[in-house]
Image (cartoon, rainbow, N blue to C red; front, side, top):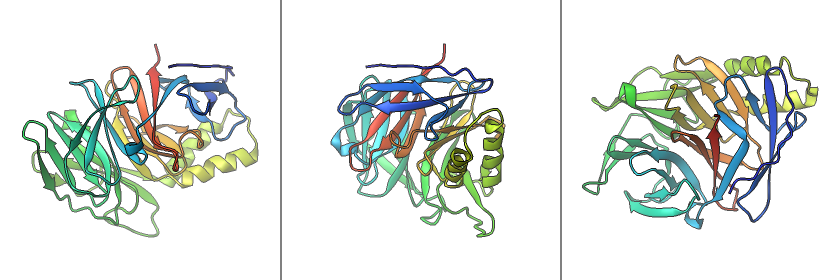
Length: 312
């Protein structure tokens, strides 16, 4: 069910949106306010999705620790899993209800999922990949060379380049404590080998510079600016997906409640600040042809799925 209550503040560049959730219901009420530092921050000129109208679906209890998120265009269902059990959940994108479950592996720390051609691919925090073939009901494990020190949390299939993208929450392979950087790695599907250099490196300086650009024409207090910069500094990838029409790379961070967007040339494009009360631990992100989806844990209150429409 959709419900929106919108107050528009027409700014030259940005619109600030605060989302308030009604308890015990699937409705989301939305109120525009440039005074709320926990709001979603949108550069209106290049954001494709309408954050003034959203649907929220509670997920079943088994998905209280919902993690990765993907979309199966063949079956028109969402794919997800929880952190601990080797189970894939097929979710109805219209109401968040579980349609089917698939046991693909043993218990483990599973963090991301992708639909790759006719297979489902799951990654654990150690960087191991699990290729599940629904035709044979068999799972094949591939070691990438990444480890728990890298703490892999996000996974996406880059179909045009026939590669998987793996988002590291913690250290890079060539870790240097004096160099503050987060990395996205690429694995070639044909060779099943990890490319030695990161596909994308994200530094705090790049994020801070982007934030400063976005704040240029916004009048907010120094305290609010300080809070946003604090959230930027907490950035650590927890999910990744590629927008299907323009190739933009969306990276969600549970820490700081952020979505960072890069274009297909890997240039930073935008930073969205999610409402921390609604997205206390956002870990999954994906798209269908007309929507953006974000999944989040609710700190002991069950998993949630949010659905945002593509602007017309």
